[in-house]
View (spheres, rainbow, N blue to C red):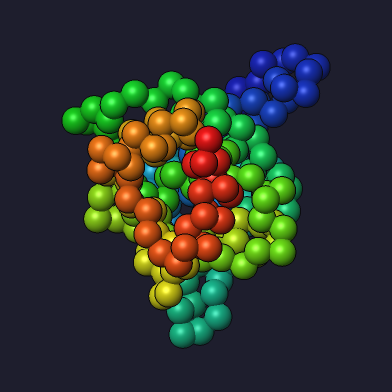
Length: 217
């Protein structure tokens, strides 16, 4: 699949030449959480065709945005991961999520959702200046699905699934509730009072979590 160029001598246009094609930034979104196998990427990019995914992987690998390697035995699986250059897209993904939370309304019946897709939104809500010298594990649940974040010295690292011993647990009724609070943190108390957000855990950890994600406003 031939790539297209805007033909503009412009930094924004040059970036979009590379990552502006359909599915490309969502592929980056999938890899921001860490290395993934082809089958994992296919499962996370709901609606992408195998031909399209293969084409996007090839383009990004040739551009030095992602790389491919084989895990050590016994796994011995081939995985794709972001290169240091590719990881530099993370701040842009965070800002896209910050902008996009203002556009999300109610989730439609045909709107797919996977919990790891909230990672860019969590990064947009996260306030690293409040996380210095903190060590905290926070679990996030949307319905029955879970992921967790480890916060250490101002950095946020997300992981799939339940945490072994979370300090705090935030359970959102649905993804739309998270988006609503993300664009307007003052909606947090109403979400709690109406049962759309439940927060539990060690008191100090709960308070720290509220401050880290701007839920105290």
